[in-house]
Image (spheres, rainbow, N blue to C red):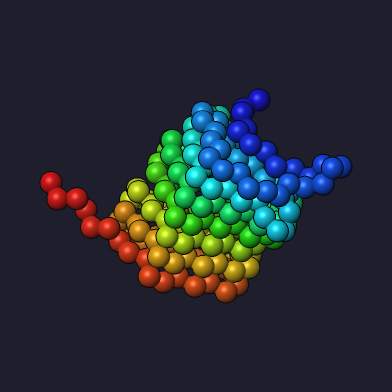
Amino acid sequence: GYRVGYKFIHSESGMCNGNFLGIGADGCCTALEVEECARYGLLITNGQFVAFRGPDPTMVDVKETNEGSVRFVNCSFWGPCRQIARIAGSGTVGFSDSTFWHWDANREGRSAIQASGGTLLVRGCEFQQDKPQIALTETVRACVIVGNVFEGPARIQNESKGTVQISANVERPPKAR
C-alpha cells in the first residue's frame, strides 16, 4: 500500500490528544490522517508535510469519523499533491500562520482545502499558488477564513448552509518582471 506519515485513530486505549512539535512527513501519499482525535485537541506546531505519491496525494485527510479538534500552527505544506487538506467529520480543523505551496498537481481545479463537514478555521495563512484556495460543501457547520494572503484572486467556493465569515484576506499582486 501507499505510505501514511502519521495516522491518528481511536483504539481500545482511547484516542489521541497532545502537542506535536516539529513533526514532518515526506514522500507520502497521505502525510497525516485523522480517523479520530480527542475534542480537546491534537495540536501540531512547526510541522512540515510533503505528499506526492500514490493515486491521490493529500497532505491532511480528516475522516468522517473525527469529532475532535485538530490544529496546525506555523506549518508548511508542499509537494505536487492533489490537495492540501480533505476535511470531513463533525470536529474542528484549524490552520493558522501556515504556508501552502503546490496543490492541484493534475490541474483539475481542486482547491487547496476541501471541507465537507465540521468547523474550519483558516487564519493568517499564505497560499502561494494562483489556484483555488478553499471549497466548502453545504454540510460544513461553521467556517472562518480571515487574514490570509492569496497568490492571485480569492477563489473560495462557499456552498455551506452553516455560518461562514470571510474577511480581511488579500490578493498579492504579481511580481514585477
